[in-house]
Length: 150
Image (cartoon, rainbow, N blue to C red; front, side, top):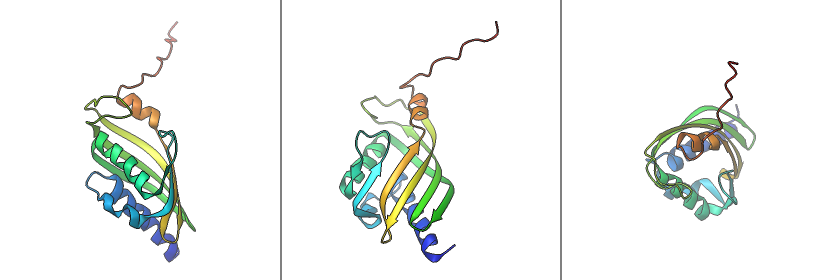
């Protein structure tokens, strides 16, 4: 692994711990993302652009979930692209997308693809189990499987 690849992995790990985990420090966001950073997440109507919009998104998730902790299960870097498979655990004790807090604990997995430029995150693509999250919170209910015992 090259030094640059290792640096890129370290930057992504630092961003996950310092921005997304509950005990993090959102003031580091401008140090970790480019001014034209774009955050793509299927739970958002539009991508967040720039450090300020990104911070606002992160704050909404922090307001909705306490004790948020991310565990990196796997990480692979090639040049300026880092792919991370992770697991998030937290408790829903704040409003989420117009839904009242449930007090339920969540355990969600996902994959993030980060594109870096000049030692900062330039683009992030999130693909997480949003349906599983909403199901765990009781916001959506999956159809029952038919009884095939006939």
